[in-house]
Image (cartoon, rainbow, N blue to C red; front, side):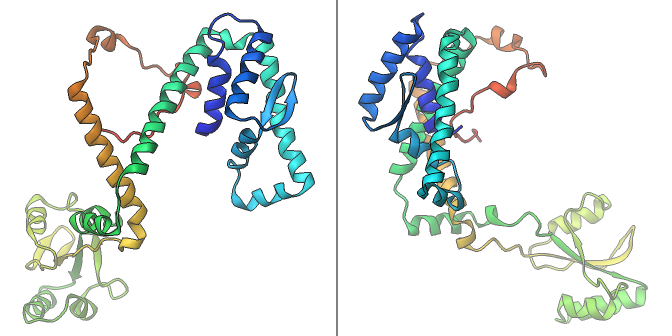
Length: 300
C-alpha cells in the first residue's frame, strides 16, 4: 500500500477513534474531503470518490497500462475499482471495524510511519546535491562500488617443477601473467584460475596471498592442488553513471543518520529493560498485518 492510500485509510479510521455512529463518521469524512479535495467524481453511500483518490490510484499502475485510462472503457474500469473499495469501506463502517482495538493500534502505527516517512522525504528533497558532490563521494568511496563477483586473485597451476620454474623466471623477467598462463598452465582450456578468497587454502599460503598488493605476483607456491603462482587482482569499481542513483541514496542515508544521532543527544529516551527482555518473538505473531516502517537506514 503506497503512502497516499495509507494516508486516506488512516484518516478514515482515525476520525472515529471514539465510539461514534457510522452516519456521524460519514459526515466527518465528507467534511474532511471537502477541505482536502473539493472535486468529487462519484459518491458511494455518502462516501465521496475524489480526483485526488483517482490520481493516486492511477499512480499505482505502470506507465504501459496508464494509457488505457484515456479511453471511456478504461476510465470506467478504474472508477469501478474505486467504487468497489468504497463499498467495502461502507460495509466495514457498518460493522464498526474502525473501533476494533487491534485496528486502532495498526492505524496509529501507520500514522507514525507516514509522518516519519514524510519527514525523510522532505529531508531528502532539501538536501543540496550537486554533480560535483556526487563525483567527490564516488572518488572517496570507490571500494564500495566494486562488484561482488570480482575475484580477488588469479592463479596459474603447473604440471611439473620444471614448467613452474620456467614460468616463475618469465614473470620475474617482465612477461605478463596472461602470456605465461597461456604457455605453461596445466589446463589449456582454463589457463587462469580465479580465487574469491583464501579460506580453503593452507594458512601459510593464505597469509602470503593476503599480503600481496593489487597487481603483485606471488612466488612459486606448493599448495594442496600442486604448484601454483598467484596474482592479486586490482579491483575496478562500477562506472559512475551505473551507480549514480546508489550514491545519491547513500548520501541521503548518511545525512539522515547524522541528524538522527544528533537529535538523540537532545531527546530524553527511556527504555524499560525488563519489558524489553520479556517481549516474545514468535512464529505465531501476525507479521503479515504489521505496518511498514519509514524508510530509515539502519544504524551503522
